[in-house]
Image 1 (tube, rainbow, N blue to C red):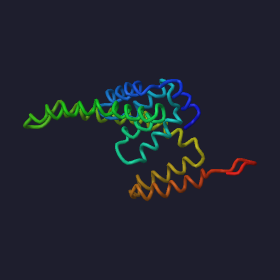
Image 2: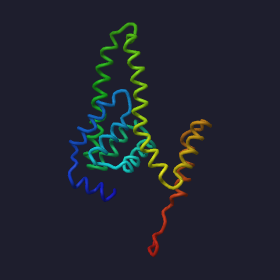
Image 3: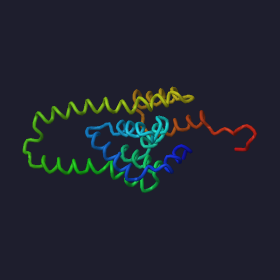
Image 4: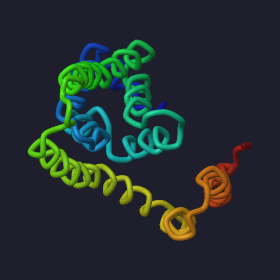
Length: 193
């Protein structure tokens, strides 16, 4: 944990505040883009920098499970401990859960599926979600390209996954090794490691 993150915790980011923020993120994130909305909410409040968000976003992407839930848990524990993690996850899940229960209840009664106008609206929302998602991805890409060897690892990842269509796990393991070689811990001058 960084000194600034610890200072923010001691300054009083309550678990309840995290619950409210992530509930708001979930409400505006219907259709996608939850990481983008989370980044905007956290950075605007001064709770995280773009670099700190990029770190937790990357960990959330790499861990199994839903990315938004992983992100909420990591942000919650970083800013407000275990209780913060639990309430941040509850905040991100509750609106979607209630919405899906209501949508399931309504659509179960439709014989011919969703009406055409609603399907068209959902197609438009999907396109909008891509744009929202890019607002979260671009700051993370900027952080990644700013570190030593970041452009090389990003390019190799894109080639392996996007062009060659290789499996994610071996690609991830190899590129983690490359990242470790490039950024291996170095002994500070005059101090043992």
